Image (tube, rainbow, N blue to C red; front, side, top):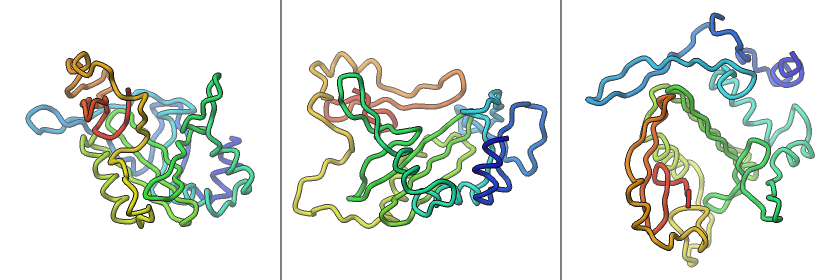
Length: 220
């Protein structure tokens, strides 16, 4: 296929492939699990096999090669990476944080590219710091509810903080005055833990008058 010939092979991603048939055998596949009430785990069956979300199977080693391509391009060049990570704009001209499948923001004073994904008990996060020529990724197959907080702790451990220590820094990112709820009480009924039909788990909380998902993603 095009992706195999032009991306996977040049990068040496020999254990990465798209699966469109659920009956195909994937060697050394890690099954996914969901945490049930009472603390017991049960199998979580994936039922989405498409050329997109849910259809790409890979390994930590292979995805590490993809990660490094953002600051040491083998597939494409610096111009291609720049196009891939250029933030989009809305119809009113307002710039957003999302580029071509990649969130672009700053963390601890460094430019950061990131992507989160989750499906049927599987979770993955990729963080790339191009100026540091460094990044990390996490794979999870147990639908860990503390996944996001663990990602934050790992970033704190690995990425030096070069922000101005004398400047006031918000605890959370992407805050704005427009995000403050005029009537926080009206949103209190939405607080709590939710489980979607695909078994994804989310926690919604009001923090300082703002509604957040999993204690970090700003919603409104």
